[in-house]
Length: 289
Image (cartoon, rainbow, N blue to C red; front, side):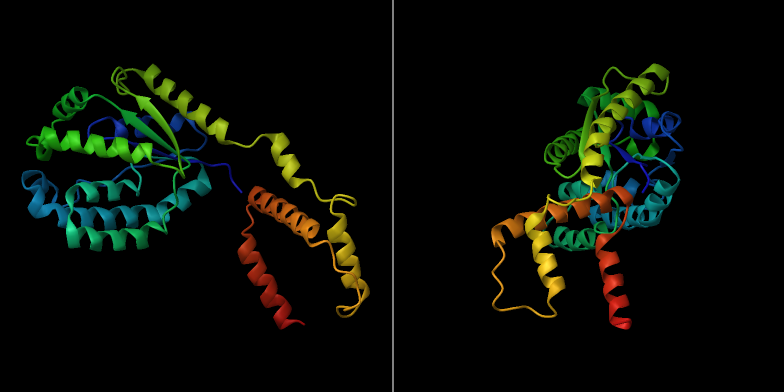
């Protein structure tokens, strides 16, 4: 199992996600970059002119595009090293909540749920946080044609949606990085600062060697006495003996739980898919009784 990590940069439009994603790889081992392909969306310019009319077409195009880009690219990149992306697949749903309604939102939700289950989640989301005025200034400075008539109120709504989304994330680590005073493009020290913050969070996530060794230490005689005695009893008799004393079920339950924890620790540390290994073993025993 590799120690390669998937780092996703998130934040409102214009906050600096792509710039930071492009500049981070030198700070991480064999890192590659995955950038969102958004300019190919044929509905995007019309969407900014008329959100209500073009929201569904724009959203579905983005959903399928993001799925096709990440489904194979993320696992493949993580085989080689770290991966830094300027977006998450999950954030697509955030835009849908903001732009779609009723039947369109329900239909989108079903498709997103089916596709999202196949996309690896980031190990860390770096959320770039900036004031509204700073974001609007940066959008104006990059001067993309289809963003020139963007409604500032839409950016406010999007920022509020991002804040709510980030505050409710429970299954992914989040680093909130204020960027009002940071300029990744012209200040290399700001990129180094962001990289240091990311490394600190990732290091805190990693289990210590002591914890790993504790998880890998095999059960030895005396640690699981009830289980060992019950195993000896089963091995000594070809079939269950009704006259044999009942095992201490409470003790056996606890010891089986300890053993299960140990097996899961070993599987996680070695990268073994325990469920798949079990199924393969069952098939092997069935074929060769």
